[in-house]
Length: 91
Image 1 (cartoon, one colour):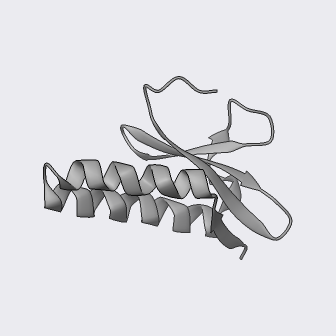
Image 2 (cartoon, helix red, strand yellow):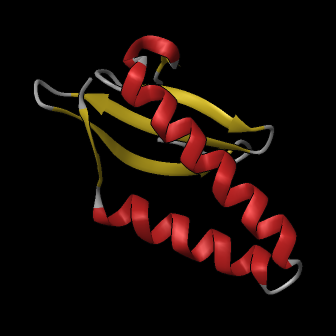
Image 3 (tube, one colour):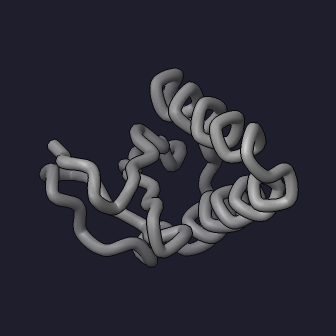
């Protein structure tokens, strides 16, 4: 099993998203944080479970109908590089 590392920008995106949702509905924020965390744990165990990413060398895992995690598989770990809304333009 590979290690899991959140890049600083991805972690900031996660924190801002959860705070935004928490300001409106605490339970929804907790549920969303749990879904994102569960998705991150899943790719740790099954790195190829995400679809091939839009950027070469990346993969994307849908963790919620509106959010996806963009990650790279590197020799020692899974690096989460972005957290995106499904309608967000990327790259």
